[in-house]
Length: 379
Ligand SMILES: *Cc1c(COP(=O)(O)O)cnc(C)c1O
Image (cartoon, rainbow, N blue to C red; front, side, top):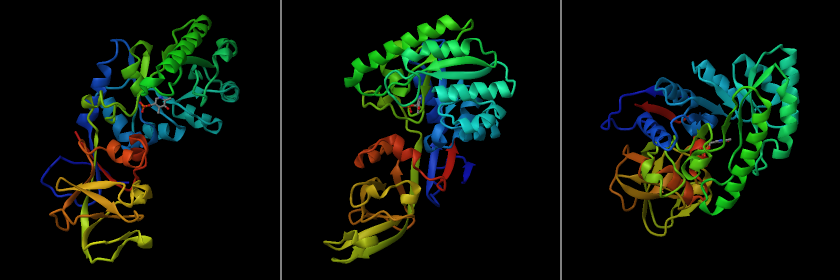
């Protein structure tokens, strides 16, 4: 993996496939999300999955330096360890810890979610064994997504188990909305919120100290302001997507994926391009070979005219099958030459639009971008 800081210089031609990450846009997005919060609501920055492709260490360090986040969240212990090793000091919630990683979690001062009787009992055993005192843990409530968490009817029992255990201290309790971006799902979301309040009322009876509650991801922040509770968790919004055309003008996608034309071919009528005769020229066709492939996260599904890139402002569809390390695009109608810059996505032609061509979502495309792509951070 290659990461470096560079001064942005729009006149330096791109030398290799590069993911440019605009930290100023990240800051803008966080500030926009925070403008939706009440004054005392805390902001948890979700930096799981390599910070959705942007490198969690770089993103978290920046957010911490600028004092933009109160808490970080990662999916797995390994991601939290990487954050600690790069100097991140704020609390780190592990959303989906495995029992086998409890020792590392404690060694690196990460905070586990207890989401099942199995994880709860295993952590209490571990904490007893290691003589832990008031170790911060988080209770996950399953309010209808049926992914991780205790059902509302189990919460009383969970509280009874935890309330007299000095080894742990319940820092927060949280749940997750299953379709916060879908305005047709409001009735179900309200039901989820109601169930979460039910959990909150039970938990509040059991602990003499303040437990924090949180329930909203990015779209929850935007669509359910009444359900922010004490903290919100945002991932995709920080990276520039509001999951809604109405909100999108307020967000700035933080990444530009660019490359360059490695070679140009004039393919005669009847000629093929790429593997397995994936494209045959019906008319003489000019193609450009670009150094991004399915190993970089541009899946084969984008091949055969589904996906496209931009060259000198013009749209160039992908022809034939996407290869592992490169893809070919049709430039018959585009005035360009070898070495010219290629935009796979940027602030205007976003990764969300490209993802939609393959019937997927921005989340999937950006988290798939390979770590071999060079990342450059611009402040
Ligand atoms: C990934 C995740 C988030 C972040 O969701 P966004 O839609 O990216 O804001 C929040 N909470 C939980 C539990 C998650 O798994």
